[in-house]
Length: 188
Image (tube, rainbow, N blue to C red; front, side, top):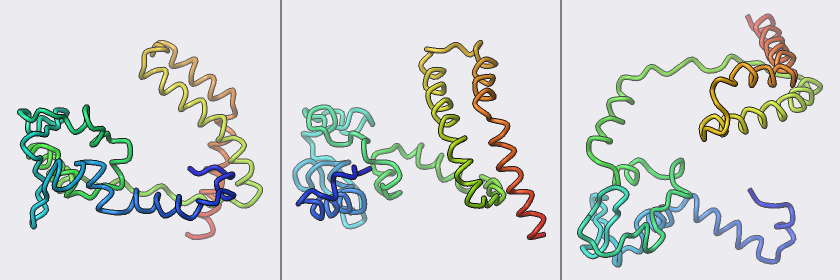
């Protein structure tokens, strides 16, 4: 996310170019994950990444005899920007063969779920849905974190659901279901 004030910055274009490089460049992804090519790692013609002998990545038990951990000591491989923008080859480069085999088996055997049914909202419904969904989403996000961290016991689940219902959960569900039913009737 970029703040609205960023548009007035004389370096705005440079910031956009940097973000584009950071998120979509193979060079940047390699740098974030492995460090400086030729210094902390090498990359072979077949795409295999190899840490230099003096470097390790203890979080993945890679090169454990290396004196300098590229994550702990140098700040690479910190996962802040990894994930959705890493190529599969890059993800596989730091995971065990068993993990890669597991992902292959999941992808080969999974049955994708059906997509959500369409429920196009008209302009008034979009505004209403936004007004209803925002506090619901905030409550869900906040309490999900509290349940995970143990700040809220699962014995309070019914109270949590009651909080959602008090924030017009049923009205929101009815709005979405109504739009879906209207779409189904007009589109067979």
